[in-house]
Amino acid sequence: MKDLKSEILARLSDEVGGIDKDAPESIALVYPSPYHVGMSSLGYQTIYRSINAVDGRAAHRAFLPDDVEAWRQSRAPIVTYEKLRPVSDYSVLAFSVAYETEVAGLIQVLELAGIPPLAEERSSRHPLIVAGGPLTFSNPLPLAPFVDAVLMGEADQSIHEVLGTIFESESRDGALHELSEHPHVFVPSLDGNLLPPIDKASDEHLPAFSQIITPHTELRNMFLIEPERGCHRGCTYCVMRRSTNDGMRIVKKERVLSLVPDHARRVGLVGAATTDHPQIVDIVNALADSGREVGLSSLRADRLTDELVAALRRGGHRVLTTASDGTSQRMREVIQRRTSEAQLRNAAQLARKHGMKRLKLYAMVGLPSETDDDIDELISFAKELSSIIPLSLGVAPFVAKRNTPLDGAPFAGMPLVEARLKRLRRGVRGRVDVRATSARWAWVEYVLAQGGRAEGRAVLDAVQAGGRFADWKRAFDALPKGRPRRSLVRPGDRLGRAS
Image (cartoon, rainbow, N blue to C red; front, side, top):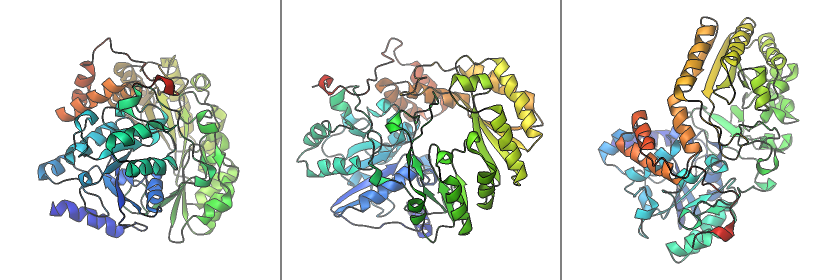
């Protein structure tokens, strides 16, 4: 345990911006992936700062260990970073869950903490388990067997209302009944499968930005801030499309720049449609003028102008990253991804003009109606782009998500996805670097993305069997074939709540 704690102390010593606060109402704020992933999450960091800003309340961070098995063998409890206090000692554990397979991480944290993973097996002597995060925009039902309450959507304000309810309530049952009346909180034990609408934070809570800068993350020593929230586009596969929380909300340049601390030498501008910000060139240039390195998420090919790419190069960009998503022009039109070959070709030419080392292009395989002809079009086009600038393809199997127009679309199947990837690799061999997401784990993600409580409980079986792909497949294959598959109801009709 001494060695395990020493790793925590070493990370804390390298952090800038940590908050070490004691308070009567303290919670364990848990990320169900390792530290380097959790501390790259802008939402997690924002909630951490927000809770700690409240008088009498504190949030202490905890993470899934890097080596779960080593931690299990040590028999050491999961502890918070700020206090080295077992998370099981807190009255509330609040999890931020980004994607489907992190349900497994949530289960592992609870097991390592000595807390029964299944909510039905916990009593008043156990902490209340609440969850929020990006997963709630799509399908939180696989979380239902394990958590007591789910904060739907943007929890910038609702987290304070939920914690107030919990700490002021005289009993666990009383807290859950009161939470079930909140317009944006899902209580699995009371609400069945009826989900309330997702919450939308008021503009006064924008933008989200980092509290802590650390070298031990995916985005080493980078300060993150969102110049916009949401997206005004209509891509049919995307949860954050224009219909989600009224599309895109803009944060003015002056506000963004005023929040960047003097000590931040690397700044990441994060959002679903960052390059659609009307002042993005001015923001990037201002940061570059101050001597900072600048990173940008979600570069849209149709927004890449000479001026913007020049600004990105000044900000330290060496690789220009954008997406075609569809493997062909036809597929891009099918999914309403308004990106043309001409725009992607222009991106390659601009990257070369401004001295970038490489163009990285993301694409999906396995979309509905896709054929080998679409893969062949990507092969031909990728080779054309590689003659302009060295090219990397990042390829992911398509996974249909709830709350999108493609909700319910079938998974293409592991054999077909693997065959398409093989065809792609063979077609561009020696010309283009191809890196693909596993078809197997994409299938796991799909089952959870389209599943419900039964699929969530199957995750527990998979984790306890060892967590290998074969364990996940066995657990899912064991589910009753006739189980309800489309049981999610949204928005929740509160009149239909189970009594």
